[in-house]
Length: 187
Image (cartoon, rainbow, N blue to C red; front, top):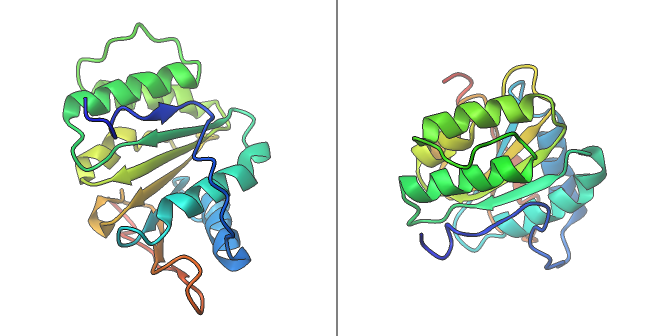
C-alpha cells in the first residue's frame, strides 16, 4: 500500500492550526451540516490551496455535533483498489461496525459502510480523492443516515452526485475564497 493511502486515523485528523478566515470556515461548516439532501459535501481546488487545512478546521469546529466521532481517511493519488478496501476496513473498525476484517471488493465495503453509518452521527472526511471510483467507494450514506461525509479533491468530476460542492481558490486569499457552487444534482 502506498504511504499516503495507508493513512487513516479514527479521530485524529491533522493537528496543524493555521489561521482560517471565519467566512471560509463558516461556509464549509454550513455545507457539511445542510448543504446536500444526501449529507455529502465536497471541497475542491488545486493542489496547495488549503483544502485539507480547511477540512481539518471544520472537523475540529464540528466535532461536538458528531458524537459518533470524526473519522479521517486520506486516499492519495496512487491508491489502488486494494488500498481503498483496506481503508474501508479501517474505517469500519473505526466507527465500531461489526466486521470480520475482510472485504471482497470495494462495493462490499461501501455496502457495509452504508449500514454502519446509517445510525451513527459521525463525520467522515475523505481527503485527497483523485478518481471517481475512489469517492464512490466511500459514498456510503442512505437517505436516513445520521452521518455526514466531506470529500476533498482537486477534480470536480470526482465528487459523487448530490454533493454540495464548494470551490477553494486559495485559503486566505483576498475576497471570499470559498464559493458555493453546486455539483451535479443527480447521479
